[in-house]
Length: 184
Image (cartoon, rainbow, N blue to C red; front, side, top):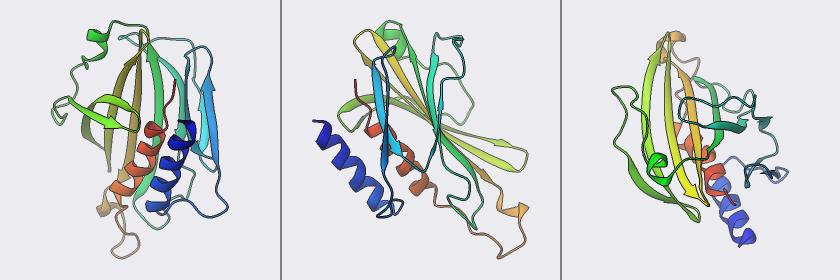
């Protein structure tokens, strides 16, 4: 089964045009949270920042972010995937806290070998647009949440012709490959 997950991840990344022949995947596994995923070796990995828990009971396990210059000559600012875990009932796992007006209704989606609940949203900041996708799945008494975030600068911030708009589908496909590789 692990080979199948890796194969799907590699094909997804190749289709997205991100993997060069020299690129390799790294594996992360948390014994404490009993969860793991794969990510591109060139991406920046950060373990959970602290033992603090947010208002819904989620504790950050790890964050993977794109390297600087990943999408050169575009309005790309940054992108990351953060995995968090909470020991909450399944009914609580299915409920998302109210967020901005631009949030989508919760929907159920299959990603890799897991079923998730997905909510998307976006918000504007000074000169930026931040798009988010939050995936939640419940397994063995725990709720696992991936927060995918894409930050792009408004095209009006640049002189005409100096940058092009980043392909947000491509960026999210690369982030979702991490979600697809989730294993317990």
